[in-house]
Amino acid sequence: MQATLQKILEAIEELKNTLRQEIGKVSTELSHLRADHQELSDRVKTIEEELTSLGTQQRSHETQIAHLSDKVQKLEYRAEDAKGCSRCNNVRIIGLPKGAEGADMVTFLEPCNSLFTLERVHRVPPKHPAPGRPPRPVVAKLLHYRDRDILLQKTREAGPFTVQISRVNMFPEYTAAVQVKRASYLSVKKALQDEDVRYGLLFPPS
Image 1 (cartoon, rainbow, N blue to C red):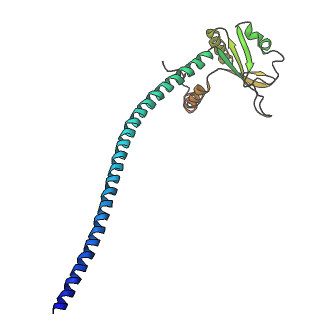
Image 2 (image 1 turned 180 degrees about the vertical axis):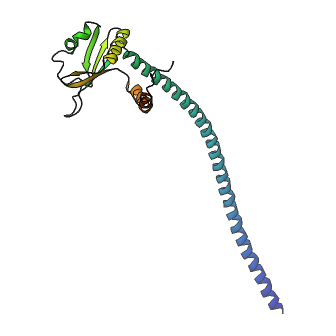
């Protein structure tokens, strides 16, 4: 009986030692988990602070971008307006055959020059077109804006003329951006022409 009791006590003591070891392991793991949790919590806090800072920076950048976009748009408008003003005395001549002007374009346009003062005349663009392509347009700059309007009006009244069997037309010279905008109204112009309605395209007030 005494021996059996001794064995039970030894078994209980062994179990207690085992439990202490296991509890120690669990305690160690819990300590590690607490440390990991604290580290994770610190990282989350840091990320939240960085996200808050990034959000503030983003709003600031969005404000700056909006301001710069508005400024760029205004500068583009001014540049486009300046380019348009630099062409306000220009007449664009379409369809003039290559070489028809001879050695001097100004001399070729002498009939116009006797009525209006031409500052300069040249073909554009500088590169020659590929074979079979229409001749390069001619741009003539008149000294006075009013002379350009009179010349275009007389050209419209007289209708297209021919040079070496080629039909030649004169138009105001516009910037590329304005030409694109005017081209978007071609269908409207065609409808007005079909209805015999007078029309005109005007620049919006600045």
